[in-house]
Image (cartoon, rainbow, N blue to C red):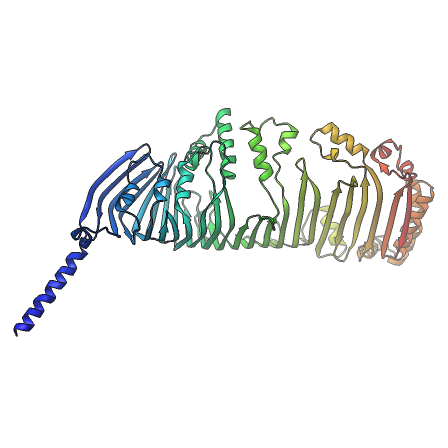
Amino acid sequence: MRIRYRAGVCALALMAGSAALQFEPAVVRNLVSGHGNQHVSVGAIRVPLWSAAFAQSADSYSLDDVRFTWGDFTYEAKRIDFSGVTVSRSEVESLFSSASEPLADRLMRIGARQVTAPEIKVIHKLGQETQTIFYRNVSLNDVVQGQVAKAVIGAMAIEKTGAKGNVLFSYGQTTVTDLNTPAFVRLYETKDVAASAPMTKVYGAVTMENLDMVDSAENLSVQIARVAARDVMARPTRDSWGGTMALLSDMRGKDDLTPGEESRLTTAVVDLMGAFDIGFMEATGIRFKGRPDGAPSGKDKQQAGSIARVAYTGATASQPADIRLEGFEAGDQDGRVKIGTVSLTGFSMTPTLNGLKALQGKPLEGLGQEEFRTLIPTLGTLRISGVDIDALSKGETSGKPERTRATMESFEITADKPLNGLPTNIRIEQRNFVLALPSNSTDEFVKEIAALGYKTLDTSFLIAATWNEAASEIALKEVSVQGQDMGSLSLTGTIGNVTKDLFSPDEATAAAALIGAKAKSADVVVEDKGLLGRYLASAAKEQKTTPEALRTIYASAAPFVVSSMMGNSEQAKTLGQAIGRFIAKPGKLTINAQPKNPSGFGVMDAMLASDPKAALAKLNISATVE
């Protein structure tokens, strides 16, 4: 019995000792300091009891009631826990001191296995607006010299107050890898007057889950399933990121800006746009809905839509920059628009940013042609595919609204290889734009096409031209248009004596170069795929004859019509006869024109010709029908 009693006493003593060792006495209380725009207060710094009892250097600390003001930001946390700390407690305390040493340098000395906080509140003042951010279940893991291997935020909420209303954001889990906190802090507290500091990686990768935004002022809500980014680079701006953001906020609230303010704003925007870069970023599962201003609050009046994916890939040495949007759909009960893909590849804002920098804040109004040209960005290639439009038309038939349906397989425009701001390589293509012809249209062209028996209009076109500096030529690769069950018309050719003066910002120089350009060859191809037959059938019905009889009349008259317009030259006869054969038996008509003068057929030749007959006399024309 005595042994059991002693054992029980020992057990209770052990439990009491263990509980006591878990107690965290405060080694520092009411730490308050301030320096410049930085102010800090810490209610208490605590260490485990066993460390205090045995005078050992603790590798764990707890900070209670932390409040830290840094510029326009104020951070508040009820508790922050440090564990596995590899530096002295004084280094941790220095983070919250008023030392004149930059915060970024102090962060570089911090090392810990983990830093956690149940909740952090951040208040950010932006001019007249205030943004409040709540971070919950924050964990920074494997901190070495201030750099965080992995940071996790369990949830985040943002409330932004403004004159028109509040904007609320909420986020699910956010994960950041390779977070360079010293570099991030340095962006906001360091001024780079020369704006020439090298880019530094701020994040290795970032993912955010389940984003939700509600804007009460704009009657808009947006949800995003996931956002991811990697290789986020940045550099300080002239006035620091904090100073630049404050300036932008102040300027946004002003209706009229003085010339000096406009100059400062332009300089700040250009500086900020060139101060960051992202290797890759994408957002998936986007849904949005809203109600137009002034519309009733009924659910049926809301407009809604979705985007499957939006992505950006930065330029590298082996690939151009690329922006794309996939799976777009939006509309209401009156109509919807669907777009399969929109992409922009090979674009560059570098010419624009460099041009704005060269202006040094000069007002954009009144810029000369040469200065304006320096601001033109490189477009690259824009592609749009899978367009589908279904909407109510304005007209009515028998009291019932009629719908308008249109689809487009693809649209593409390339404008690159710029010279003095103007692209020297251009390609524009539209494939299969299909429009269901409305039965009640008042447009004369639509009425005429419908009269030929077409229910839909399916058209495509292509324009492609490029300048060859070495040869001083513009190759007109193709200018064509075609219609389904109609036919096609295409033009190819070469324009010589085209020097770089054609792209000069000086209008007189460019005009002189244009006048000096000379056409060296041209080929026109006309192919019938049913349009001529439908036209003859419609015309024959009106004239109460047969299509075959009308075809014979038109084929026989073609040579005479061409001769009356272009004269009785050999070229006119060749062209007229070929057109006659084409009408008699539609297929493919190919016309080739070559200037008799080896130097080409110039603009001045056309201007000095008194009539088309004189211009035609300077060309060799051949034509074939297949």
